[in-house]
Length: 279
Image (cartoon, rainbow, N blue to C red; front, side, top):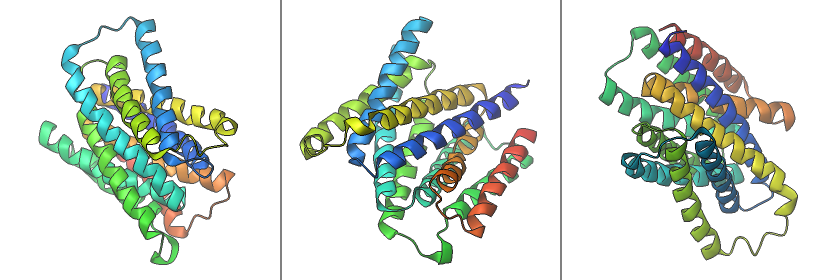
């Protein structure tokens, strides 16, 4: 298997993991404060990454710290706004908008750092972004405006995370540092807002939030492996197809309605994966 094909495979697995994690977190956001969910998701990821780094005996590289901390800040902003978007509207609509904005930002950074990819991959990028955009369109052209603004801000955070974490050389320790920064920020915000004191349903949703944290962490690692194996723009665009999996889970498990344009968007996402892998 070529390095580029391996990168596409890891990025696709990242999209699946992130999509399932966002679905779990989205369901939990209907029961709990989104800031509290973001805190628990980041903390779960931090514990998982520290354990994996120690188990793998990975060397800690100090030069990764600034990039990891900045990535943790960007990822924290992205996840908070994504859960706010879920709280304000359908997760099947908010997640794709965050995905297309994050992918576009990361792809631009990838072009600047690594030059343009092959024409077939460029076509795949365009098809993928179009697919995610179609999947994000509310039926009839209307939708929850506040939720869409939150989704756009979430995409900026995720795009920043993609670009910043790509600069590290390690695997688990940089991810652990990023999650530690995000956990610390969220812990301060949760206590400042008093969100923990107001949540009586926390323990009833611990399993769902824990699952979201594990899946989110898995998506982070798989994306980082994909970006280190191949190009940043390829890894970012493929990984950002995760909203298709979120939408499919919302449709199949929650019976959320998918319009014709959303269905076409999911299918175009699959075409984009094929084009990018072929390139």
